[in-house]
Image (cartoon, rainbow, N blue to C red; front, side, top):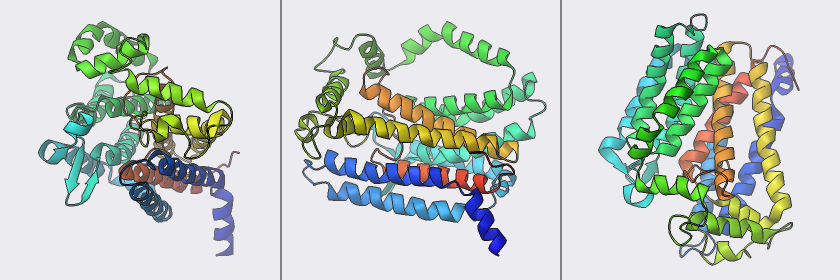
Length: 370
């Protein structure tokens, strides 16, 4: 028993765990400020985020007690359940009027986003499928099988439509295949096909999606319409300067100029009220989190565990870069939230479950690397 405890504390990645805790606490503080001027006040938002975080922590410790290899044995049922959950949006989906996509499912008073929850299931399923086929990965038929396997959930998400979340799936799938050793020619062919089909992709986009891309190229083209969000976000971040305007004192935040301030544009709230220094601390914590994920992936005892962590790291990376980038006007607006900081019960719980799975894998490492 004593040896088991020593091994646990030696293997347990406390840096990753406490980084997540710090980000989550700061997220609750930022959400409290972002929603303070709402008619309902900040308490409902803080309560939801706090409950999601606590449930997430419980999930972390529960998941750590389960051998992750068991998930690999059930990767097909996990995949099927994931597809069923995504399919629910076609029958019970809501959110079209608010967010432009039927991506939410409500059962009584409880609402959740299947595409968020399913991320973990799809990462686990793809990781196991790649491991099963690791020595034949670059065979054309095997490659096509994996693409079809990963493509079905992406296709269902695009039908909602939720282009931003679908791109997250595309990114982490591509990174997992790259790390697993897929022949580079497949990536080059895929990029070439994407370039050649870009006119058709452009025509398939909705007007609001086209505007987001055009606004990235010319931020001043529609400052009172489709470009309003980013303009206000940049004003908020710039107003914070080095030390910020102070908690609950941000003009753009507190006077309602900044849309979606508690979700997609939470980093603009941080920039305005806490300033550049705290903003850099937040970014530093985010990349410390990513660094620990890379370390755990490299020291995992098998390809399955390593690829799960790679998938989680890629998922986190694209959320962080895209979200912070869009608040600064250097990435198109996609509605992708910021891990552990943006408001959202499903999103917070999903991220905590992902960290729990990573910590589970870290406990089974053969070689420690710090």
